[in-house]
Figure (cartoon, rainbow, N blue to C red):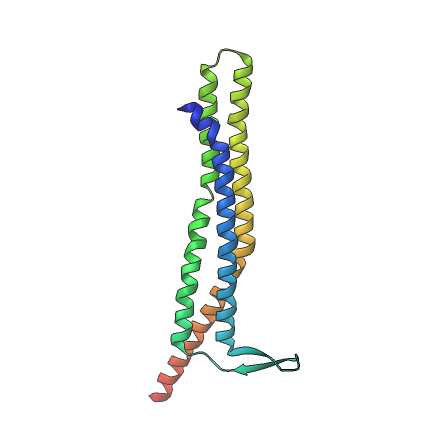
Length: 178
């Protein structure tokens, strides 16, 4: 059992890291789309491009504010993509733990070896799994923080400002009605 764990843990770490990287990049594109949708809805901007029969591109901007129900539906879709981000962020620390598992299995396997070449081989496996687990964790944390984290920060600020504006309008309206 120790041999299976110590021999397979490094490929499992690498394959899992690649899969998680692909999920992070896909989530980034989804979050970016939500950012643009919410930004345009909150700013009341819609840019249309038309191509004429002569091939010229005409752009025009229409300023229309989206209603609250539309904004909240966009926010709900955004929250779904954000939950994927949160889940991935919570799974990234598993990589060093997998590396430590490989280290422990390799060292335990080393104690049963009698010759020096087997000991060096087990030690190499033990240390390489920890190394790859740490590298995967560091790289994935940097990528998810730099890409997805910034978009989430910006969208959350936009939505907070929108909620504050809506609440302020409600308070002002109730004061005027009194």
